[in-house]
Length: 247
Image (tube, rainbow, N blue to C red):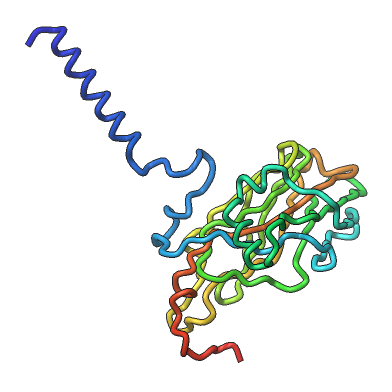
């Protein structure tokens, strides 16, 4: 085989491999974003649902250690401009449930943190009552304004047995609104085959772990629309004549 022919043959193999890879399912989500289809068992009835739209600050409680500072929360008018485009199906479903074809949400939740001094500080924003999430949750998301600080946002959940845990959603070192997400690892128990009516997690709230170099002065953070991608197969296929164990 002549030398030019060898080069042509190798080039053809490389091109074919690249074409096969580009037509596969290995890249089903943008880099850095979790894909619900690749977390744990393959979902059968995957759907994005709203956990809270943060329309009323009265449903939330904020706290931090009193010797390091104080926190205030407030309902603020506003909306992420990209929310309707990024969450179009969820918003469409919400409008159907609310019987309001124009619903988009009018408010967000703002928090103002005043630090007394620099230190290893943290604060939490929690629902007055934990919010159950139906089905098997694959991904948790929230819209947030981080004000370009190196603080870390964590979401607080409880598993099927009530064990409380935290999942890191990453740093808040960005400007403007951003939707950030975290995959729920399969090691977190969400069901027990003995109890089919209690499946799912509970959403408790958020914790912000402050960066030591930036935990001073005044800090602002804004939250909107925490949601979940969840597999609702067991919920939607439950026998209509089955008894409810929640009494």
